[in-house]
Amino acid sequence: MSARFDAIVIGSGAGGAAAAWRLCQRGCRVLVLEAGPWFDPDKDYGLDKPDWEARSFPVKPGSAGRHRYGEMQQLDPQWDDLRSWHHETGRLVLGDRRAVRIGYSHVRGVGGSTLHYVGEAHRLNPHSMKLQSEHGVGADWPFDYAELEPFYLEAERLIGVAGPSAVGDRWRSQPYPLPAHPVSRASRTLGAAASSLGLSWSPNPRATLSQAYDGRPPCNYCGACVRGCPRRDKGSADQTFIRHALQSGQCEVRARSTVLDLLHGEQRVIRGVRYVDEKGRHHFEHARMVIVAAGAIETPRLLLANRSALAPQGIGNDHGQVGQHFMETLSWTSVAMHPQAQGSYMGLPADAICWDFNRPDAIADVVGGARFYSATLDADLMGPVAYATRLIDGWGAQHKQRLRRSFGHALAVGAIGESLPHPRSFIDLHPSDRDEHGMPLARIHSHVDDMACRRLRFMAKTCRDLLKAAGCADLRMEMGTYDDFASTHVFGTCRSGVSARDSVCNAQNQIHGWNNLLLCDGSTFSSTGGGESPSLSIQALALRAVDRFLQAG
Image 1 (cartoon, rainbow, N blue to C red):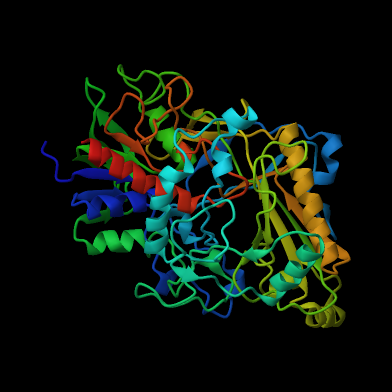
Image 2 (image 1 turned 180 degrees about the vertical axis):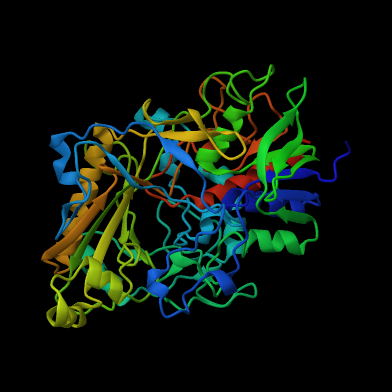
């Protein structure tokens, strides 16, 4: 069959959308296949409805992938101070095994998980890219920060990232496109506390508009980014890269289209794909290059499921590396009540951040850094229902009076830390469970080792110290990932490297031995960084991968 498209992109999240836009810029005809649905900001996001607080991000048919979990680890009493708890109910995880209450939090849809992300726009710390050579753990990236910096600039310009003038380790060749957002009153209170402890506290770089930009309005600071942005000021992939790709006239997006097979021949060249649409009809499309951008769970699943005589262990898995080196979200949040009103239901989530411990060697006796941030809105404490059901004791008239006195007093500090690879953390195929198309489901295996627990203990202590310094004496709940697997950021299951013996793709994100098959998602990360949100790095890596492929081609 002759190819109608120059490239097929599987997945339309941060990486797939950026790759599609770059291909269109370069004059390529692009087909984007997305397993999930379209979301319409005007119809699907209910922030203008009276019951907005009862609405989380909308769930549509097919908007969440199915997966399974391996047996979670036994919890060790020496880390009991890292157990999640609530002031009324006690421990949130009962028993002596790690739980999966939230699990892998994601969205399948045009725009992927950027549809419900908070909108942090972080560059990796350059010091995090040489973990093996400088600290003897994990893996080095096969290129350095300077190689990625111009692609960060391009992604930031298209999105309209708003950020501060001070950049620290993440040097910049040009300023942010937009000025930083103002910091909320609640975050200013936490900033004063940080200063009293000798810590920095600065505006967080955000993929949210601080001024009108590219035909989109500025943020109105409603704080509900994770419920979907009806104004379109949040730089989700559908409103940025996908929109511009479609405007080029070179791109077609087919939603609810699930790829089953990567069609390949004797020379280990991917000729095209077989996919099934929402009505169950099977289709074939061919192209001279294929990009897989399905995320660090679904990308290894697709590669492992595509076995043949040429790839008996799955595509890219000659040395058993597909699915290995899984890295997850290592996080902690402490929530307290302040004696004075803070208006903490207003503003941007995670509007301020502390990078002081972000370098891999910044925490004593631990390899791997962490960042700290204002987390009140991230903890979903933005409305009276949340206060009434999660923070305020009592019942009846007394409960109502307490609610009126306490609303807007909550403060939370969150932390996200480095996640290092571990032999017991990986993705494989479930031996028996299948999806509706007969493809094996991905199975997530996760292990939090002692190094991670020491990092978490430092994160928890620092969160508590910040709240105490801010004047909060009453901790109400704490949540962490030691006892409860909960990940929005997942990485590393098809990491990039120099050798096929310990990586899946090369420095150009091409799978070793498959020269027209690229990966453009978080699966290629060689390290996670010390708490950085990964979407901007995924986008920069996708732009670089497409450019390198076309230049070589």
